[in-house]
Length: 195
Image (tube, rainbow, N blue to C red; front, top):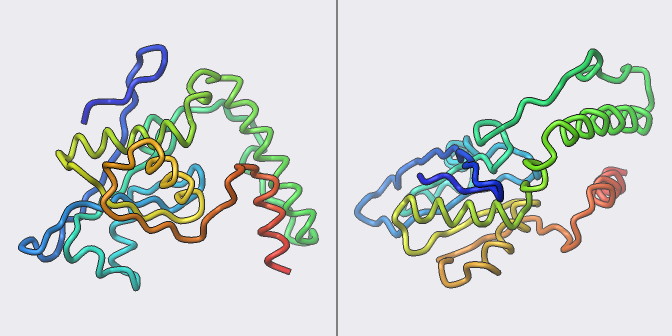
């Protein structure tokens, strides 16, 4: 697959996995899969889908998993690490304090990573990942693609459909997230739902 470019002209490798339709005679195309996140690997999604109640989708479609840019096998960057980056909260802390500890720990790590790779991080947008999906479509020589996305994957699917509507075959958006991407608001909603 031709690597999608960044504004400075460098190319990004996008890692893919493919599980071919189990009934090739009925094959209708491909379905790209995204498990959500952002920042979650999707490379193993085809295997997980075939072990789920949605397994029927793989009968007549090839299932395509991919790591979005900046995630695991797709141009993941090495961020500077310091002692304590992998520290876990004390088991005796109340849930709210554990959550605060993890949030503050991860925020420090993320700030350090952004400072080390600012240009790369600026290109980790939903719209750019949608463009990468269209490069995947091209690399697979498909006129149209199907898509199944969960949570942040629903925003990715909406971004793809907005930019490339005529190239969408079928699309299922599961657990649709709010149109405004705000990690704090999402965390608050998750914490409220758990109560």
